[in-house]
Length: 107
Image (cartoon, rainbow, N blue to C red; front, side, top):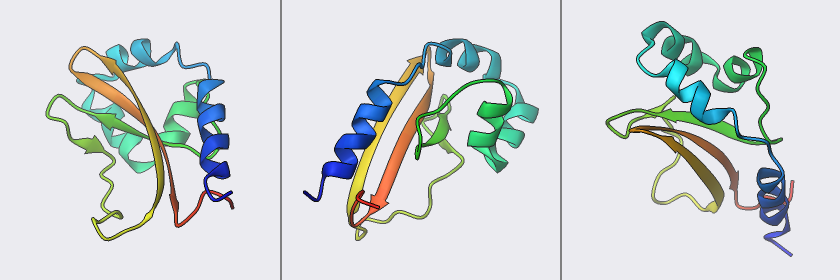
C-alpha cells in the first residue's frame, strides 16, 4: 500500500510526547539569537535542549506573521508526494512538526 509509510508516520507522531512544546515556544519567542541558531539546524537545536522529536520528522517555528523558520523553499505547487504536519500553537506562534516524502513514504 502506497500510503503505509504515511500511516506509520502518523502513528509515530501520535505516540510522541510533545507536552514540552508550549513551554519551548514561550521561552523561544522573541529571542533573535535562539531563532538564528534554530534556523541553521532546527532538529539539532531542539534535541540539544533535551526534547525529542518523532523519527523522520522535521520542524519549523511559525512566527507571529505566519512565516516559517527555517523557510521551506523546496516545495512547489507542481511537486507530488505525501505530507503530514501537526502544529502546536501557543499564543500567536507555533511549532510545525512535519514529514514530507516525495512520491512515497515507503522508504
